[in-house]
Length: 219
Length: 218
Image 1 (cartoon, rainbow over the protein chains, first blue to last red):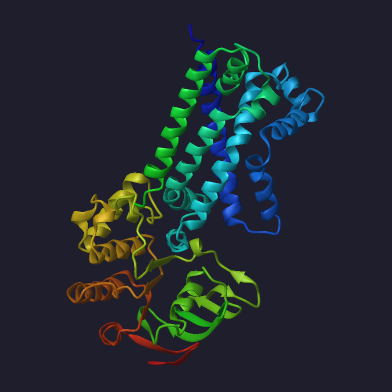
Image 2: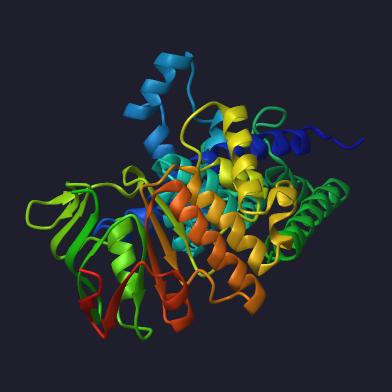
């Protein structure tokens, strides 16, 4: 009988991670697009790092940063009463950090591409900056942002390396679907490996169709 | 004295304009060849560009004073702007586009005021149309209603008729003339069409590349 827990966990973790990455990512992208300074290239490099780094190395950094002996790790424990690493919350952190650069890069490009005259006209209408962003900039950039969020979701769902490092591989607790596929192959359980791979492959195809056909289409 | 006094130098990479003129209530046409700095002057009045030197004074209060570092935010200048291409929000109805610019009242009052203004520009029937489906002339009417929604003191029209066919251009000229009088605004109209100059202008400011040459009617 197939164990559906890893799929169920993966979906929950990816949805929460995508929501967090979208809010954080769009806010950061907006700041990067609007406030150019000599620090922007550095911030951009840092937030893009998760795309370039080997996921295990990214996971190692997160483990060091959030482990029980780190400042952040201890702060988490004092608030929530337990460690962050090797829990489902750890899996959410790993997936969020993996998804974040996809949201930021797509949103930043989309926000920069919004016709500045539209925003200027909104200012002449007396709209404060946050209303210009809410009424003009973000709606006009929504397709690009949507594409980034979809890619981020796919990335969060598919993460293996960072998740294994930060959340571990505890069946029934932190074992997400990509990790379960690895385990199944190691254990010679071909049926489970095949089912997991087909599900992840299908989701990836749907996301890519969404990105190229729905979000990328010109108005 | 109640008027708009402009005496500025504005620079963008590769181009600079020196503009000096006074505009009273009524229509002041900024006329000259394209690329002479008319639109850049409007940008300085709108506050989307900062002059490198000089002052812009509205009814004796400075909007911009480069030497003293004064720069009133675009939001606080009580402007209405109509561009050549109306720059309407396609994802909002014409009524919403206008209502967003109404500054006083609650949501319902803003929407009622928007409908009233759309009616005044002859676009009342379009209030809830799909914005993307409007014709060029209809878009300019909605843009004009939107520009008046904030009860502006200054109305800036940048080539407002150049994308229209001849009949809608005539109609729009008449509409602008009437509305400027009704709303008692100081209107600056940028154009390189001599017909606009003849039919609209209470005053004319002539441009040659990079500067204003003479302000008639002074």
